[in-house]
Length: 161
Image (cartoon, rainbow, N blue to C red):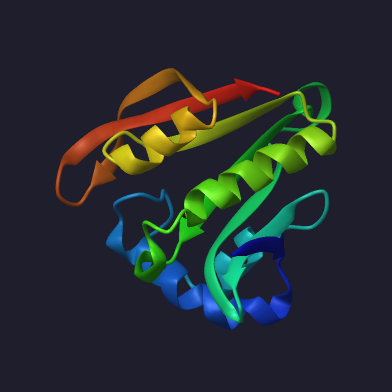
């Protein structure tokens, strides 16, 4: 597996699992019926935003988008979002994407990484991000409406780079 910059030609491989993850409403704070056009706009931002994919041969296993979390005086803090195709879960795809994004943020001169909305019931993601050095700095109570668990917290996770 390798992580590389995404190309617009990767979109047909990304959209099916992205659509399913958003529609499930368990881990991502997007409208469950987000349109393909809106999802693509959000996932392929203009620079300095970056989109990457984890691939094995010609198969896209997962993807991440990153860039500044804010502008101006807070522009030195990066943020990122991740989606791994559930068909490829448990293969280290999330870890590879996470490590790549953190390394790239350091190389790009960011001083910190902030994840704005990690659903507290997404325990695999929380454990992964902690293992990569992210800390939970706040939990927004009942900020996410989970289809099975009802209102649950959203963690804000942070790491100085």
